[in-house]
Image (cartoon, rainbow, N blue to C red; front, side, top):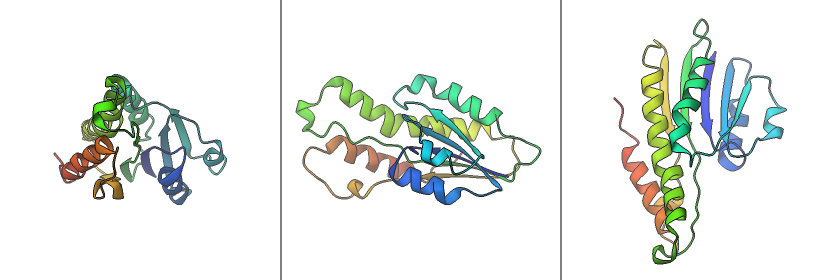
Length: 165
């Protein structure tokens, strides 16, 4: 069985990737703020976690629950797909609230780093294929007025994408 941990599965690219990964020998751990009932109806091999990645202090518990659910007797590979992101605040940085800036940083930068760190640590004893895929955005290369936080976080994350312990 191949196990996939995917963030941002409620819609968009995360939902589409999840649909493509549905197979009898795949098990998906889907993470998003809102449960995707349409996705859940497509397979019995999906565990869904309604979780807001802004709550970075709770990610360790989430990842612990997920990795403990992996059946070590039949695991072929474990994969983390960091896809979730938020665009807000779409405003000039001087107009953004501290809370909006903090939320943006938590979801777009800290959460993927924490997820990656925990993934490496919690799966280090597994002698199977392990991979991490970090999804970025075309906005990381194309500046638009009012999107400075989103652009900066995606640029920072792209520069970290090749880091592996």
